[in-house]
Length: 118
Image (cartoon, rainbow, N blue to C red):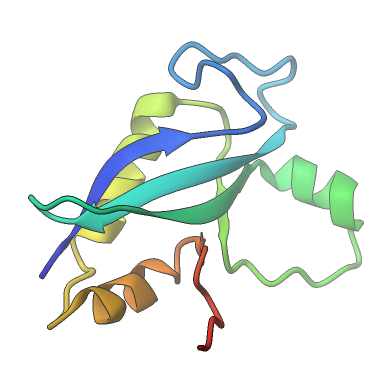
């Protein structure tokens, strides 16, 4: 089973394809990659913070160590490059079942069921 990007959504940005930040060198926003099994119904959300290095510095401070998990660090906003980067990452996310696949995808973004136990 393989992962497939179904769509991208942001609660912060209405139109991701046409968005232009006020400052190309300093922005950050939440991006939800909606991913499911390739060629099948079903999808789940994986949350990614898309940001620039300067946004990281402004947000966390220059002396703070920041763990990069669930961050996509870019130099400028380019929707197509972000889509390609995510799709390229997902090409390496396969497994015997959806849970195995989703665990690999969760390295990119925080899975809505991460740490879930019944």
